[in-house]
Structure formats: C-alpha cells, structure tokens
Length: 153
Length: 153
Image 1 (tube, helix red, strand yellow):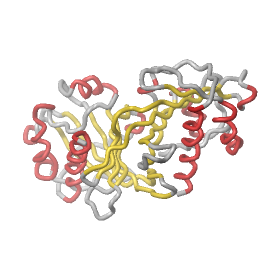
Image 2 (tube, chains in turn red, yellow):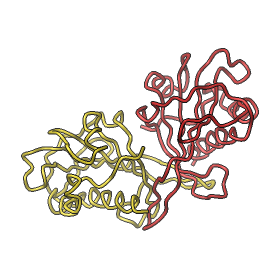
Image 3 (tube, chains in turn brown, cyan):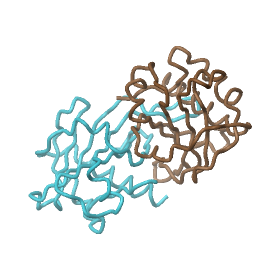
Image 4 (cartoon, chains in turn red, purple):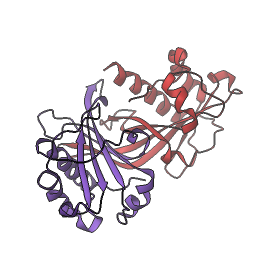
C-alpha cells in the first residue's frame, strides 16, 4: 500500500502540472520503446489523476532509477495516462490521454535539476509551471533525487 | 471494451494452463527488459485470473506482434501476474505471482506451432497441459496466429 501511495503521489504531481504556464521540454517521442517500470490505475473519472498509468524509463537512466540515485544529465522518465476501460471483471487500458515527462537538466536550478513537461497524445506541449505545479511536491523525495516511483522487479 | 475482453481471454487461457501436466519450455529469465505492450487488472481474488497483468514481447517478435502475424521461430511473449494492491483510490501492482509464456516452435504441431509454459516467481516451471489448458482457447485467434492481445500505441 505504501508503494501505491508513493506512485499516486508522483502521478498527482505530474498531472497537477497541466494547468500552469511554462515548459521548455521537447517531447521524447521514442518513449514507447523504453523500459517499463510499473503501472497503476485510478479508475474514478472525477479524480484529478484519472487513468491507467505506466512508468517508462530511458534505458540510460535505468541503473539510476533502480538505485534511486545517480541520475545523469539528460536522464528521462515518462508517465503516459490512458483511458480506463472496465468490463467483464477486468480493468484495461484504453486510448492514450496524455504523457508526463521528467528530464534531468542541471540548469533547472529552481526545480531540483529536473525539467518537467506534459504533452497531448500528438506530442503537443501542455501548459505547466514546473516549480509550482510539479517540483513542490517532488521535494518530498529529495533523498531519491525527487523521483517518487520505485523499480518493480 | 472489445480490447478488454480479448486480453481477458488470452489471460484466461494462459492461467488455465497452470493446473495441467506437461511443459517443455525454458524460463525466459530476461523478459523483464522486453517491450511492454499493455496491461490489465482483474481485482477479484476469487477470479481464476486474479492479478495485475502486463504483456511483454521479445524485441525480435515485436514487428510480428504489431502486424498480428509473421511470428518467427523462437518468437516469445510473456505475461507476468502481480498481486493487486488497492488503496487511496488507486489500484497498483504488488508482488510477482507467476509468469506465463508463449514461444514459437514449429515442432509444437499439436498446439499451432507455439509452446506454452508457466513459471513461479523464481522461474520454476509449473505443471500444465499446453493443448488442453492453453491452445484449445487460443484456436479462436487462428487469424492472428493464435495470439489474443494486440499492440497498444
């Protein structure tokens, strides 16, 4: 359950970014082939984090992700959000809704050395304020270099 | 919803293998790094398919998987089943329960050219009857070379 809450927290943060202004991060269009870490579902459509979420890590960032530290410049994590389809006793993923991104950038001094971004399914950037909408909550995970989710073997 | 049912069906088949005798398939221990395709949750513990499921495809089998045909000898698909953790409005994956496998093998003439296997989290084979417990249901997907699940962009 602790793991659920942590992942919910990081998801909450990336989604909360969507309503703020500012960004400056390119869409990492190749994320679909990156390492899948774990998944989570928030089935309530009224919830701000509604969706079937996955976490993907760029292959070069995987060792740091597994250790929970040591992220190198350019290390990138992605969380796509899909529709939640329920039926026949199963909860499945539907269409892609949006894609949230964290990328290591030492020039992002106000947000712990990470750039935060969010994109629609076509890769178009959504407005956000990385500091207020994203990093403020990620501060809670300073001991893990501001990354909430953890590797699932 | 159609997609949910199809995936539920394939999951049902691989899990139904677990109670039968016979196997003959090595554990593909490197599956965790393969291409993630999609995921599904069956949260009811009383359901035979209980678990948080992912589908992973070996990189060399990905093109065939995306086309729904053309699987080459040795092509392998894996479906790990994890515990379902519910709390705080989220459904998350817990500990790994078991791993189901399909591997292309032209000598498996009684099961459509696929070997079916299932393993515990340590990689120990579980007993199964590939024909009765697995392939009988997969016959319904002959037009997709007996694979139920489909690529999620």
